[in-house]
Structures are given as C-alpha cells and as structure tokens.
Image 1 (spheres, rainbow, N blue to C red):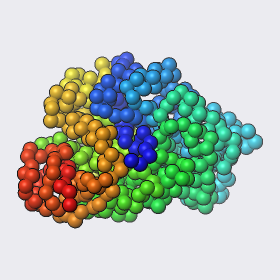
Image 2 (cartoon, rainbow, N blue to C red; image 1 turned 180 degrees about the vertical axis):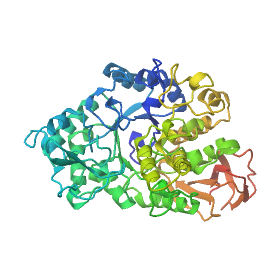
Image 3 (cartoon, rainbow, N blue to C red; image 1 turned 90 degrees about the horizontal axis):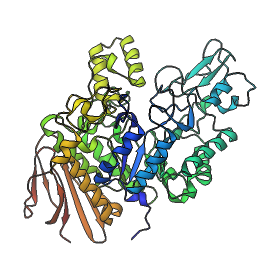
Image 4 (tube, rainbow, N blue to C red; image 1 turned 30 degrees about the vertical axis):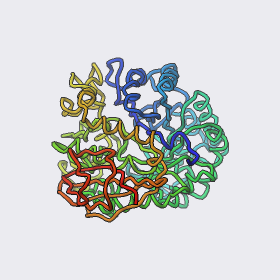
Length: 542
C-alpha cells in the first residue's frame, strides 16, 4: 500500500453559501443553514467541504472581493457561526476547506483605503500602481471581466491594476510585508482547525504586469513554497490551487510532493472541449468526446506519481454538467449517472458541486434583469454594442454564464424549493417539483445513490485511489478505460451520446461494480450500449 494522505481517498463537496440553505428568511443562504444540512452531506459520504468565500465583502463579485479576511459577511452569520460549523462538521468527519483569495482584495479593504490616499502612504506598495502614458493606461492589459485592467485614481494621478473588477485591486506580492500579512491571516484560520484552502486564481500572484506576464510569473513557485513553509505545511491539510493555464508539466510544479507547494490544482483544459478554438468561452459548440477522452487520459497518465489530479465537472464558475455534457429531460438522471461513473473512478480527488448529486440543471433567464453575475452582464454590454442580438446574448448566458449553476439548492417541492421562506436572491429553477433532494432520497435508484455508492467505493477500494490508468480504443463517443492495481483490473465504459454504440470487452466480466444499465450479460463480450449507458466491471484475471 502506498503512503496515503487523507485527501487522496476523500471526496470534496463544494457549497456556494449564498445558494445552499437560508435559515432566517432573508433569501440568502447562510452558515446556520449549512449547519442544519450537515447530516445530509454526511449521508452522501463526503469528507471535505469546500466553502466559497464567506468573509466580509461588499459583494461586487459575490464574495471574491474581500474587505476583511478575519470577519464573516453579516448576511452569512457571525464568526461564532463559523466556529460552530467547523466543530459540527468535524463531528461528522467532514473537514472544512476555506476558499481564499489572495491575488486581490476589495477596494473597500482597509489596506486599499489607506493606499489610495497618497503615494507615500505606508500601504501604497501593498498594491500595483503606475503612471499612465499621456491620457492612456500604463499598457493594454485587459481585465478578465472586460475592459482595461488599469483604473485611474484621480487623487494621486496614477492607475492601479485590477485583473478582475475595478473593485478588486491586485495585491503586490513583491512586497514582503504583504506576504507576511497574508501568511499571518492564513495561520489565523488554520489555528481554528480548518482542513485546508482552495486558493483562487493563485497562478496570478507572481505576475509581472509591465512585462504583460500574468499567469505563471517567474517568482510564483518561490512564493508558494514560502507560503507552504510559513503556513499550511505545518498542518495535515489539503490545498488546491485554481490554475486556469496549467498544463500537466506545470501542474507537477505545483503538486509534486517533493516541491512542498500544493496538494493538487484545478486544471481547466477539460472545460474547453465545447469552446470554439481561439474564441472566448461564450463562443461554444457541441462538445467533442474524442478531445475530452484525450485530455482526461493525458492528465491521468502524465502526472503519474509526480502530482495529483483533481476531478470535477462543474463548480460555481461553470455551467452544470448535465446541461453541458449530458442531456436534460428524459435522459437527465441517466446522463448524470453516466458522467459521475466516468469521472469518479479515475485517479485523483473528486469534487461534487452542490446539486450535482441530485441532477440539477442550468438556470435559464429570459432577460438581463434576471442576471446577477458581473461577468455575464459585462459580456452582454460588450456584445450588444458589437451588434449581437439580445436573443443571442441570452442564449450565451443560459449556456455558459456563471449564474447557470448559482441558483439556490432544490431541497423539496415546497415553496421556494425549501431553500428559503422569503424571496431568494436568485430565482429558483422551475424544475424543482421533479428535481429536489427529498425526491432523490426517496427513490432508491436516484442519481444521489449513484454518487453515494461511488464515494463508498473510493473509501474502501485501494484500486480506485491508486490504480494505473489505461485509455482503451473505442467508438468516438464511447469513453473506455481500465484501472489496474495489484493484479486486479477495473474496466469503465461510458457512452457519452444520445446514439447507441457497441464496445467489445477485452475479456470476460468477473463482477459488476456499478452501472446505470438495467442489466448486463456477463458472458457476452460484445456490449451494446444504449444512450448514456455506463458501467464499471472487474474483469477476469488474465
């Protein structure tokens, strides 16, 4: 048996606090609401809970603009509520993973409030400032949220850098005092007993904006090794970095245990299989199954023992996977089970985004008035100005916008789906009468129990954690691979389409582990796959 960390056999569940459970009727999910649902998460079997930001924030970017790292946003509760959540989660063998944003702060953070007062303010160098070029910004860097990445500040006649919203000024990691302050804050949270951090856009902290290097700057890994040494390296915790530009070779730099940086990173290459090459995420196309197979296989085989994979289909920034790679309507649950079986039996740590386990689908809007996400609203303004129609813009938002997955969790078929007794901050999806947790729990063959079974398999079976990965040749829309460990071979086959397909088994089946098919003939090597059929079987020894 290989030496294991707890997070290598654990499953992480992501909660978007604003949309999980409201406890006081104000329409906004909160910490007491999460506490009230911990038994549900324990029944699912998860062992780690990734909490999107709950720090004090003016909410320009839904909490990813932090104004006080050591305070809780009043809408979510108090620090006493947070302390109780940590304790109550631990009682259920669930560790809390805090979402941490240290690339930037809110412009309402005391550091920036002081920094903008004068050029010689002690906090000035906590951020990145520059003179303009005449009436123009320092250079042509653009924000992720559209427009220039530089904002003019009249009081001191300089520009500050913001790679996201202008209310999210970037921190200057070259300043040692900034790093000291951040590490001290991280240790504040670690001392409370949290189980680790998810680090937002962490690959940007080594940026060299005047050389137009934003991701993977020259000092990035030195900063991360220092962070490890000064903070979480002293604890038995899990860390995962959000790294949009990572390749397998770059991921090894972050997650090779010998380098003392992170446990793993999120890679987003998988999320480009339905994007028109060279275009923005809004310019989508039907997803390419062969490309998906090649990307996932590459990450499975290339990292080897030099790194660790994170396995996920969706999160708070991405559309819901059934709407994206599966099928809504009559095939919703079957395609959801298919995608779950395919992903959760790979090597790495799986992540479940709230509602994924009950088969939630994309929230749809009919007007911009129903859109809350700053990224979607900025895109709409930009593309309408370029001549796109409102119908085209709304179609893009309904397919790829971040609000698609941020609508409130569907708990039951009661008013507001059991999320709140008030008016929800973002509207409930209209399908809550048929898609909700209560209904899923009452149906023994629901997608919830597929996820529960997959989680139990990973906890109990070393092959799922450690087995080697081999991609098998198959029809274009069939994804087939083997996991092998200590003489045992697990075969996973998934038909990722609405069309029937055929797959020939390499040898006879010893036993069926999990499937979304009604039956499987153990003695038939030619496997006829209906739309979204998926199965995992142990093959007879060679």
